[in-house]
Length: 510
Image 1: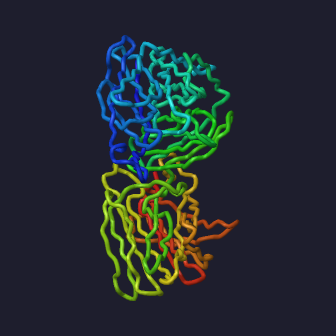
Image 2: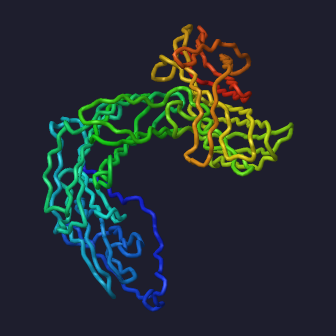
């Protein structure tokens, strides 16, 4: 099975600046560059070429085999392409543009890149090899490509300004079971004349993933992105793995030891952030917890304005980043008057910052609903009410707590057994901002009241919140006939601020 993928690195285009005193004629001096891209049979082939001016920092992509106007100067180039015979080529070199300039990436000069894993994962896998050419000055002139074994070539370059990363991936042909394998390495100080590498499993770390369904259902895309533990490393261009699986699912991913970010995207988004994983170790990761509810940063005052902060009505209780898109309303009231009211949709970002008249007591009420979900989805509606004292003359975060509900012992569909009792942990969240100029106030919990519903909010039953070992918990008596459980918590602090967090269809009973 032949599989070939071309990838260009994500970049920011910088506009070149003219130095003060430079003559207009000099600044306007233009040349041209034609980059010939030839496949393994010597025939011209379509390709994108990354072009970076080392003096002005101008970056762009140009098309191979076409004349492009460029200012005279020194450039770093990188490209990758696939010929008519399905053989993939990657290369990079520098060129000085002076007038009409032509340079060539000739696939016939490419040398084979062979990468395998030992011991081999065995049969039942699609095996691909990958390579990337990078610049050692960390410029955006980086290109990568993947192909079937035997179909990948890199054009040698002895310049120490370039380096080559290479890797291999084994993905199971089955869509319901099998491990994933990804190993990579890099060759510094130039692009070598051929690579024949056997990478060892002993250099990999294992991420054992359990992805539950409920808040997110159906098919989800999983992404694994690596980054160097320090400095710049071309091999990070190889440390990318993406695939799709139906929820719920469990699988293991074996990747190069180092820092990895794990994400899941379906009807919502989950991101674990970068964590360091050691070679030879196994780490268990659970994704898709119940209950997706209000999370994020508390609001803060800034020069007589109230910033609502980075909030999200539907966030996985374990992860600070991600969540589900929703439609809803938000309202700010003070002394019986509505100061701000807004209806939002999934395509809008809530970034309110209304002016507040002075110091005093305020209330923010936010409600949201996730629509277009598969039947039986969980965490479909949620609300958050924050009642707090704000000092308009100070740049500081408000006091209050957001409850993050965490039901224990649910199955991989976020279900509890009928007639059972579920212990729900109550996480008291007070996330700060990343801005050191915004002060934070000390606070502590005075009281916690909690309710649960088994009829979508028609009736609420009180539950006793218990504090033990620094953790608040409640016991929910699940209905014998099955159904859904909704959760509500009101937390009052020692200064009189209070917050109410509600999530409907928090978890299922089946």
